[in-house]
Image (tube, rainbow, N blue to C red; front, side, top):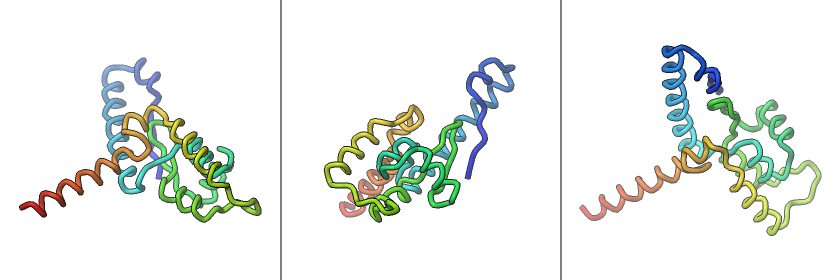
Length: 147
């Protein structure tokens, strides 16, 4: 699933009506991104996914093209499913390579966490909306037990 986007530079140079439309489109895409993040338990950009799977960004693109990872585009940036990356990570699919040591797995996880882009940070990180949903459900559960 992809979403068309308008360049922010183009939108700033456009007429007021076009700018307003681009502004509304950007808000709609951010809301859709938030919804997808909840459903997929987070989204990773290609650099983050590549670090976690110990493959290149080009290989992530290839996995998307082969439909082994689901792809989303929000405001011109590409993301893949945290759930699917986690599944591939746990399966340690390496095409003949030995699995990563625990130390290398930890280093890759930390590096991936440092590779957030502005859209992800605006949503609260690669799992922001999903974590907020879990917190909300936990609060509702506690209220239900008390009442």
